[in-house]
Picture 1 (cartoon, rainbow, N blue to C red):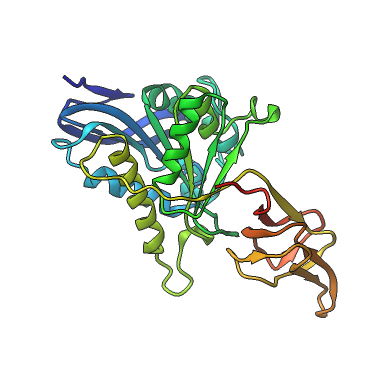
Picture 2: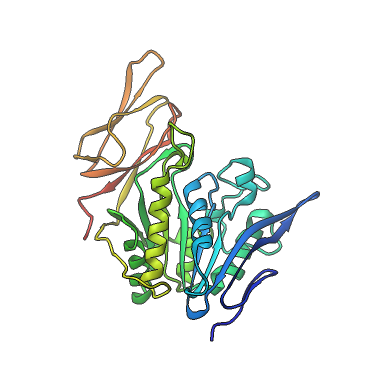
Length: 335
């Protein structure tokens, strides 16, 4: 028989759901609470944990976690879904990718500190109350308000066969052409993302990149429904793949990307992308130009290999040294 599930002060018995706010920290004048969604299945099964809003101006992931938790029927679910739709609530309120209460990036401070300021306290809560219960984990990200990127997946290789295989299978549950695979660097160990924190705890995990410019349409100002649907379909497929829901899981056959490069601005000026996001480019091809205020070209950015334009951190005004374009190395990609 399945057991009750508790997150902070919230508790869900088998066959029920419970949504509410959990206190994680406090300021001089108000508490810092984050939303928690528990759907506890009537039947035994694994626990899938979902988080959105680690960077809270990446909106499709927030909406996807909310929709999935509301759609699930606890009477037919095997196992448990735990959702944190907005991890960085202070940043969400301030419309900032970081936590404005202490200027922390929640994607760099795990496992957190219980006695820390707001950001580390949120990370500590998620580590102890959420990831500790996870069988599988998906952290929902996307391109923020100054970025453009094709939808794709990310996971770590931690050198444990079953963990790495299941992490890659989570990625393949999403309709993606590309999966970016990291091997943890020593520099990441002291300032970890929730994705790496979970992977190091032997929890098969994946990160979604869904939606550009915060996931908002430039014509309607609304969320791009295709991105939210892409996420919801992928998460549902994950639950089918691991037996939490009935139905057959459809697995993609993406290219595995293990190398990429970030092209920086060699000088200041106005940046113009000369090829579309998601486009394949040849070695030596110009992918962008930096011009002066009179329209004269000062520098060009060229692809160092056959690659894919996978991320553009776009602002017309750029300073020297700024990251501008990320390229996946297709020459080193594997199937």
